[in-house]
Image (cartoon, rainbow over all chains, first blue to last red; front, top):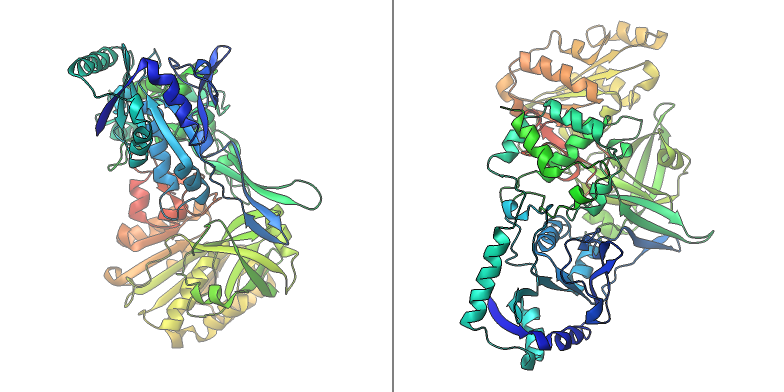
Length: 334
Length: 291
């Protein structure tokens, strides 16, 4: 890893230089919530944001995404890759994108996702956890790769980690804005990380979690929570790693049609429905459990499918907490 | 196939044949000879039919890769899309993409006995296996145990009756179980008294002996059928690793992206479209919710 320092006074110039790469999207405060929006000026940014409602997956797998356009009875490709900058991603969201990469960049490569992924410049930013965050216990609180630049807050600027050649090139073009990292900066960096490590209020011990959950398949806790759950699918929409999609052919007018994919939710009754009316996940209990199993699936080579961002907790209208559900299910084994 | 994996290739419907009042057999060929040449598949794989502007649906291949130049799909009319395809005529063009899924490991099973257990529409993918086995002749003996509702519902009826008559010369035994009695069934039962009976598919195991160390069972049918057939096979001490089943799930993409066909729990998430649709019974034992 290469480390450099961006002094506070150069931050704005650096930010503006990113616009040469493409449109810049960053966290913006809207009322009481945060959202990734196009940003023109530094003043619009809310760099101390906790979490946005929709994770950055919305830039790569759009809520509604045109795959093809019908032309003379054939599908015409709609792959596009306009360059853009995602500014201010937290470590958990970078890990979320890496999980999506495993799905979409695996053979056969999804051309839509790949084009947008290649076109995106990712700039991470350090954060302080709030009461919902549990990324530390999943090991996703620190990103080692998956970004081009990562900014760590210092009292008088930013410690910048360079994670890719592209990131290096961008820093290189603006060489005069950066300084070398001093010992004092490293001390501040370490202090910040220590303070942050102690600020987590929630954790999910992952030791043996996958096995325990599998063993607790018939636990009554699932049932209790399935009754509380409204099956609205909010948690799917806001999850940085949920990526189920439904495909629909839509007639734009009498002559032209597009094939679109849209976010789907495993809480919908149609998710497991097949032709002829058989449903493989007929009850809400089945669907509730399915989501938790999918998120807690432990891939030996990559870890869990959950990054601990806390979105599903914060935006659940029924107040169901991910960690609490898993803890109680595990507890019911004893 | 290169490029966009969601792009389908034009295929012309060469023939549409009524198999039953509900099922039609479509024979298709790719318009582009190069695509046609490149399109190879294994029994048990499936394709996605793309009616551009209306939608897509997955369907298993029921012809055999040994018969080149065309593919056949057995389509039951159950919904909007299949109804649309049923109304298509010979000469019409649809999109096809695939083949997808793992298919049956036909090469590993060479030299062994095969027991094909089909229930209803489950006959379609197993017909691919049956043809493949008979065409290549690389298998010791092939049983086809086929459970159907009524005489009218027997898929590939002429082929089944042909094999009832002449199967023994090809090392192939076909047995048929039907549920609803009708004059035609009684006629069949009289003609082939040891091969046709009224009952369910598990009744067909009666009187059959097979060497469990050199036999594979391949099952396809409605979800409820698996439990009973597997019980019968396990009673005969067939190893769970020798029992293959092909499963159905909602599939949108066919390539492990859309997430609908995910099964399993925290220790065993699988995509039916990509890791399946053929699984062993051992997979089912170690993956909750597979059957």
